[in-house]
Each structure stands twice: as structure tokens, then as C-alpha cells.
Image (cartoon, rainbow, N blue to C red; front, side, top):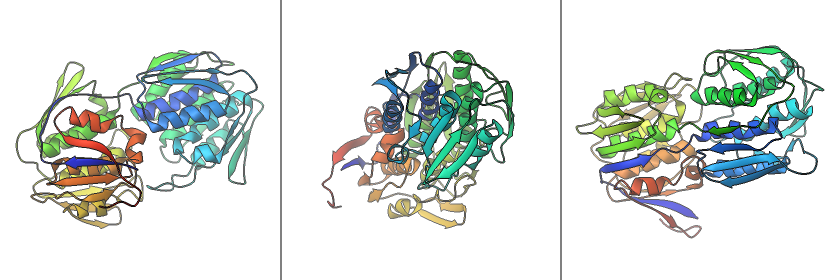
Length: 424
């Protein structure tokens, strides 16, 4: 059982290359189901979620070759299999993104319900309502969504709330639907905009991706594509928080600064210097950190995926910070672990009040989800003595060799192997 061992107190100095965005790569990989030709995806991070998606695509009848940073996908010999079983879907909630492409391409899809997860229920009702608007017959049986339609037809889909995966699923479905579809109240995340670029490369006509209203002119068939994935804004934000916690001077290569504006605004108020240098971003922290309030919101607001890392930073700041989580109901599970390290945090409903402390102390802590694990790494980098972060398989879902990248800029961090049940 792997863990991350950190001896804190070292400033970070040097360069870190930001990897491709996992949350952009996953829906684009699912979009390969819309075409039979060989598609090539570049700048793909070497992550557990990429491997899980590749395994699902193979089960569905695709020939997938993963040699990060590239992935090649083409139709395999034999009949396609429009079935996504529970054994694969349960490993990663984003697997539901095959639903739209499968029913659009093959007229039928049977996809396991993803169920709940550590940070909240996250239902897929908006996905299903949208597919019904496009003419699909939907039923749920024995834990599976079964969607059928001889040919999807265009329609106007109005989301009750913005949903990233819902928007992406229905964009892909509409790309093969007959006619011009309109999606209203869409998620505006950069990863949604990136999927729109890929669908346009495939021959669909997508207008407005990255805004609240998207127009999609469907096609009878779509082409394969060659595309390089955008850089991961959350990985970049996590390393910014790490530099803020430890101090130092780090150049983040290929950091998508424009996509990080809500985070950058808060970090600058907290005392970080963040400057663009060509395609790269330099991050420094020279003085004392100041407490700053933050409230998560859909893009272009402060991303929920940065809340835990920002909280770890605020644990080291001077003053009191109030952090409000409006997206997921269970996203404060990192709080007890941070408190084991000496943090002073009080939570009430969806609000956490963080009183900065003079120092954090190393401890053995348990990651509960992907971003919570990153927050514990950030805290460990500044804590006195040794921190052991367990359940690093969460980290491996979304961060490419994070321990190697941090070690290269001066952190005392390494991956270790613990015997099951071992202390501490």
C-alpha cells in the first residue's frame, strides 16, 4: 500500500511543468466513440483515470493504445458493445460520459448508474432529461440506465442547474443528432470549451461552448481527430497553493493563467506574487500570508476543486478566513485530517472558519478524495517533522507524479510502501 512521506519546512524553487488537463481528456476520450477512424490525443497525463477510461473504451469495442502523453483510439475488429458495466463505471464517475455518445452512435446504450461518491451524490438526472428531449427512450432497470433511439433529433435542452458532465454528455449526443440543438444554462468550464473544439474538428458545428448557451448542428457521421489537450488549471492552482504555503519562487510551465483567474485573485490578496512570463507563470511568496475569504461557484467562480488546497493554505495564514462550499455537500472531509496536523478549523453546514496558526505539525493522515489528498500534501510541505499521507490512489487519479514534481523543486517528499495495517 503506497503512501506519500513528507518532511516539511523547505521552500520551493525551480520549474514545474503543468500536465494536460484530466477533466478535459476524459470527455474527449469518450468522444472517440462518435467516429470509427483512428483519433490521436496528445498532452495526456499519465493518470489512473486515463487508464480506467481506456479500459472502458476497450470493453466497448475500441482499440486503445496509451503511451502517455499520447493516446490512440480506433474501432476494433468485431461488433461494438454499447454496454458500460458496473465493474468499470464504479471506479470513476466520469464513465457516465459514454452514455451520450453510445446512444447517438449505436441507437442504444446500457450504462451503469455511477452511484454516490465521497464528496456528494451528484445525480445524473439532467443527463437523462436532456437525452429525452433529443428523442431517447430512457428507463432505469437493475442499476442501469437504458437509452434507446433509432436516431436522435435536435431539440432545446434547458438545464435546471449548470452541470459539467451533463453539458458534455449532451454536446456529444447532439453532435450526431439530426438538426440544430440548443443547450441553455450550460456549464462554462474551460474543459467544456475544449470539448467543443474537438467536436468541431470532428465535423460538428458547435458555437458558444464555454458560454451559457451552446448551439450544435449535428452531422450524420463524424471524423477522427488529432488534438493536444489544454493544461490542467487545477494542478497549476495546487502548485500555486504549495508555493504559497512554503514560500519560494517557482516557474509553472504552460500554466493556464486565464482559466485560473478566480484563484489567482484570491492568492494575490493572500500575499502571493503571480506574474505571466510568456506561456508560463512565475509564483513567489516573500512575506507573511494573509487570510482571505472564498466561496466556491461554477466557472467563472472560484472552483470547488481548489477549495481544499486553498483551505490548507489558509491554515498557515495570519487572521481568519471563511470558506463557503456551494457545489458539493460533503466536501469538508479533509478538515479532521488538517486538524490532526494542528489546524484550527470550525465547520457549520457548508461553511468553514479557518483561524491561521503559527505552525502545523506532521502527522499520519488519510486522504478521502482527490482534492482532499492534495490539500494534505500542501499542509505536509509546510508542517514541522514528518507527514504520511495514506490512500494515495486518490492522488494518482488526478496528479501526474506529484511527488516527483515537488521533489524537483526542493521538497523533501517521496512515495513509500507501507504494509497493510502498518503504523503510524
